[in-house]
Length: 388
Image 1 (cartoon, rainbow, N blue to C red):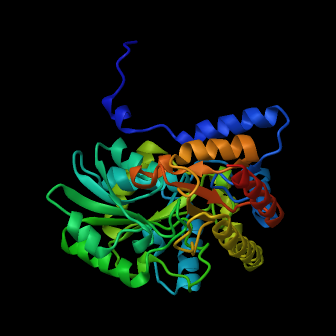
Image 2 (cartoon, rainbow, N blue to C red; image 1 turned 135 degrees about the horizontal axis):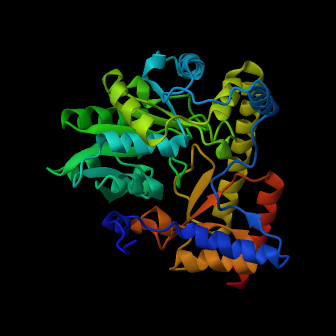
C-alpha cells in the first residue's frame, strides 16, 4: 500500500478536547477524584421504557435492516411529535432517520455542499460542523460572533459576509459551545435572506428540546426549504445508541435516500425500536423532569461562575453549557483548563476546538452533572483561583 493519504485530511483538525480527556483519565488512574464538566453528554441515560422497548425488539428478533429512511412508525412518531410539541405539520415522508445527528449532518453536507464553495457559520461553533463541510471539499467560513449577537450569526452579518463563493449557512440553535439560541425573528430573517441569495440553510436543533426560557420553536415553522438536524442523544439521553434524524424538503428525499442507502444502509434497528418508546406520555414525563433538573443546574452555575470572576455576558437559554470568558485569570484558555484539571481536579474544555475568535479567552463548562458535583466544582475552582 502506498503512503499517500487524501489531501482532504489536512482540512480536518484533531479534537483537542480528547487530549484533555486522556490527561483526565491518567489522573483518575492514579486515584485522583475529578469532577467532569467537559464532555457534552447528559449524565442521565435512557429511561426504563426505552430500555424495555429495546429488550423486546431483541427478544422478538427484530434485528434486520430497516429502510434506509428509517422505520415508518418512527418517522411518523417524530412527525406526530412536531405537531404535538411545536404545532407544526411535518409529513413523515420528509423525515429521514439517521445514525445520530452526525450522520444527518454528513448526509446534508453530501447533498448540498459543492467543492470549493463556502458555508457560513458562527465562530464559536461545534468543530465537527465545519469538518463535515470540509469532508465534501467545501470551505467553512467562520465569522466571529461575539456576545453582542448571542455568539450567533445575524441576518446583517450573513449579508455582510455573503459573496460569490457562498452557498449556504450552517447554524445551531441552541448552540454548542455557547448554549445560546438565535432569536426567532432573527432566524426568520436569516432564512429569508439566504433563500433570496440562492443558498441553503441547515439548522442543527439537537438541543432544541432543552430550551429553558421560551416556548418550543423549530426552524421548520419558517420555511419548507430549511434542512433541520435533530438527535435522540441530548433531550432523549440516548448518546451511545447513535440515532438522529433530519427533515428535508420533499423534493430531495429520493436523493438523500440514495445517499443513505450507499453510505449507511440503515440506522440501528434496535435503537429505532427503542426510540419509539421515547414519545410515550410516561417517558416524556421523565424527560421533562430531567429537563427541569438541567434548568435548576443552569440557574445555579451561571451566577456562581459570575461570582468567581468568569465573564458570562449572555445567559445560556438551552443545552447544558456555559461559554465563559476566563481572560480575567489567564490569556491562554488551554493552559488555564489544564491547570484547573491538575490543580483543582475540575475538567473544563478550552475554546481551542470551537474556532479561533475565542480560542484563547473562553472555556466551555458543561453542567450535565449533579447539582452536588457542580457545587463541589465551584468550591474547588474558588480555592484554585485564590491561589492563582
